[in-house]
Image (cartoon, rainbow, N blue to C red; front, side, top):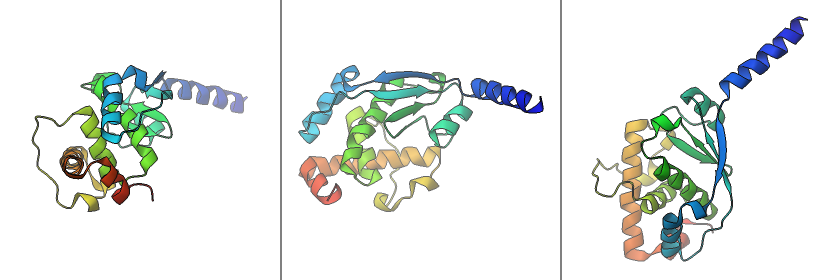
Length: 179
């Protein structure tokens, strides 16, 4: 009897704590971002469906994504995890950002290159100015908090934009991509 009550209680808790909504997206939902990627890389995007989990709470987000509480979204293993929609200022840009990570993962770039490329695609830092971080290639992202991660992302965008503008995507691929 005790075991039955414990099992029912566990199922109830799991049901209450994991109340995310699930849907799928693809590049056909974000044609402008898909066009930007193809323009930069010369390689078309696939129309693979990606699962999106919109969590009902920050606790649920951290539990199922494995990401810190201050991250708005993350992409892992062909899944996008989102904080509750009420916490995300621009959900379309956020999903496009994570979908762009899904594309650039194939090149196995260092994370700072991937983040810079993703920010070029979404344009999220255009018209903004933050403090730049030194030696971006050496920054350990697991040591960052929300505020310094924004500076990190901004710096990635600045540095990768320079590389792309001066040398093009092929240079990035040869220097930093899959060998």
